[in-house]
Length: 127
Image 1 (tube, helix red, strand yellow):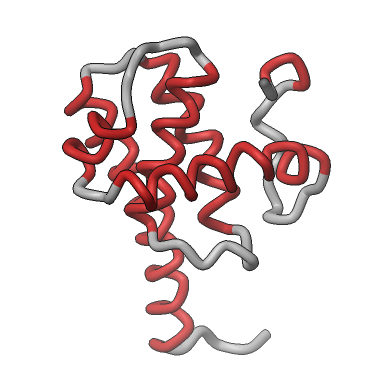
Image 2: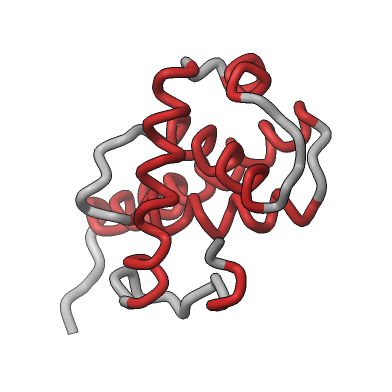
């Protein structure tokens, strides 16, 4: 067995922090908008695979904002991109692009275990 180096430890810690950052950002936006736990749960389930997707080059703030807006739409909870913009400080243009990408990729994230996680989105909840 190869010993773990400081570099390995910091890389693992960075990966853990990145996931925490997206979840924390989702939670902050949800709290700021006073959205339900149902929307929060859906937003997290959208943000997690989007954040881990090697083809997604968006920053965690954009991913979180897009995921919150997408989750609100999917759960029929009234909110606007402008509301999410104010809560997240991510532009409406970026939120629009990010949520559309995440919605379009829900099937791909659900069907394939790209990230070593079990699908968190049941078939009946994709749309």
